[in-house]
Length: 203
Image 1 (tube, rainbow, N blue to C red):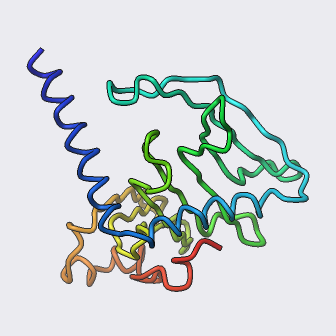
Image 2 (cartoon, rainbow, N blue to C red; image 1 turned 90 degrees about the vertical axis):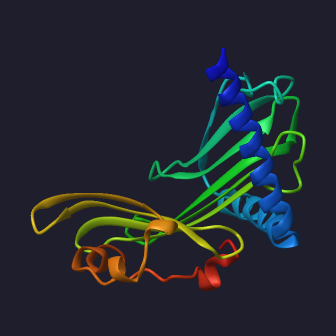
């Protein structure tokens, strides 16, 4: 019982923390939400797509127990690639709880993806925002993650380098000047920008 109470308390603090962060970010995150949804709509407009619709499910947690959602996955019919994912209210599809959009290059490799998450009772102001910029140096798949304020907070490097397996996942707090100077770090992340630049606006 004590453990369950501690977990519930942690989740409440996490929600409050995310809400405080998004409230501080202000209009930039609100605009980002609108831009991600607009990019989703642009990405599927006039294209042959396949939509996979999930079952109606209830949100977890006491605070969201009266809210339900349905997931929609949109695929390019020709290539089979996932274009976007949207989580909606089953009885009001215009109410969007989550949206993700995936951007590919000419060879079909994922180069950018965007995501935004809202609380069911606070749809206009996101609690989490994500901008992922991907790179493929050699046999590696690398991405660096930013939020809609342009702040870097996570990065990943997976694959093989010089015949050895690499599986590196780093929070921004763990990335300092000394680590950035190491050959492995440079091999993984050296080509990725430290700021999202023009990709701060979903496109």
